[in-house]
Image (cartoon, rainbow, N blue to C red; front, top):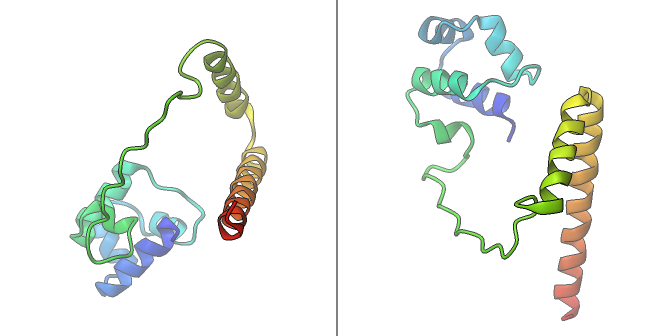
Length: 132
């Protein structure tokens, strides 16, 4: 769920207008409209203001369920990429290149990464199904 959709859903479930949110948070109603329509991504500090205005815990802005999300088990990583040596240099160069990209380039990169993850998941499911 997108953060804007979650904010609108919670606001409407509590019968609050964007004007009510403006009074409770000090954030302009046009800002809330931009967030709800996906034109602006709020900072964590701003999300905390929304959570206080809605009188809900912060996790409710990210989680659909009634119960708090369960803590995921820690992942065992034998070698963290970018932790040292050549990997660290490559990670630094990648971060520098990413910082110079425009929004369109970052979206393209994220879409490519998402497609790579989806292909990997499909391949894993296929191999599990085939018993490989």
